[in-house]
Image 1 (spheres, rainbow, N blue to C red):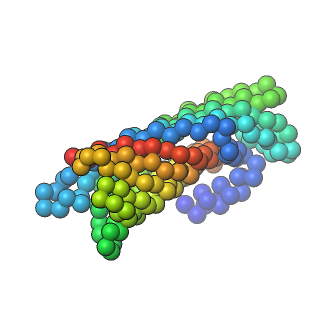
Image 2: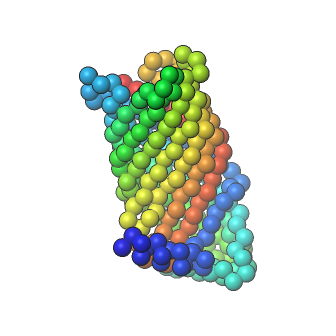
Image 3: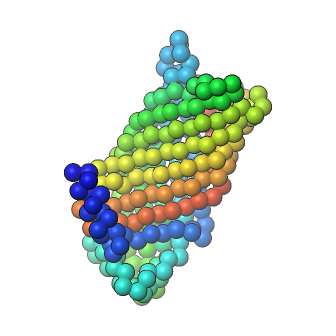
Amino acid sequence: MLAFGLAHLAACSSTNVINLEGSDTTRFKDLQTSFHISKEDETKRLKIRISETKGEFSQEIADGKIVEFEDFNLVGPDQVQSIADLTMASVSYGRIDQVIREKFYMSAFAGISRTNFEIDMESASGKSTGVRNRSFEVYVDLGIYREVLPYLNAGLAAAFSRNLTLSGITEWEVFFGFLPFKQAQIIGGYRWFKYDYFTEDYDSGIIVELNGPFVKVDLSF
């Protein structure tokens, strides 16, 4: 069934899927917290993450390109102005500060996420539409980092989520983490973000790609 869905998606992606990339403005907001769930092993944690991603796009629709939604059809050549807003909340279980080698650590979490996706699109030809989608997804995030100083680390991180329609996020980050207090960390760096949205029958979809600097607050208890 999954293979059929992927084949169907590949077949229609050249016509009914619109790619939005190179945002005119990009905004990332993140807050996460984690809790010890084992007194014997402090690396085991339950993590809650809330993130918001916004972007504004100006996108050319190529000649012959067709984008179809329920009450909205675009036929190129045309140009679309779009505002995308995506909020995600996740609950995951995993481990943090697992030692790989001296001063090198990794984290790994898996759980579920709830994604609210909203986008408003208006074309130069005068057509407009909005997509509102709420979905639960399987969520995974991974990180590998090195202690640079006792209060500073640096590393790479990735996060992924998918539901039954293959909609979901893909994130890659290069980051520095500053620990002003034992229970608080300020994380900053650069993020590459993609959200794939597909309708249940795979007949249409929107792929939103954003990248830019981000700041995240991480609280642990």
